Image (tube, rainbow, N blue to C red):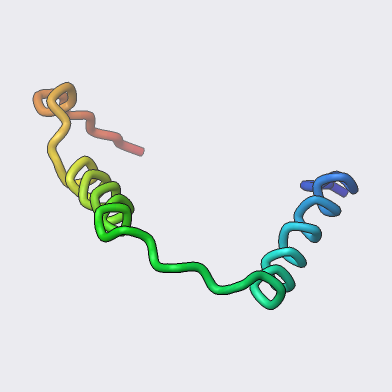
Length: 68
């Protein structure tokens, strides 16, 4: 049998999950972040989409054909 997680990593993951459930109930509500900080994840997403759909310069001329 293959074990993906050790006992220590399972305990850490369970503690993080429990803190994500309990801490929002205990802590006071926080003010919203500045508008510029909200655009940061959107900028990362736009950059990743641009990189995903941009053509690769190295493999443009290389064509590989697989036959069986």
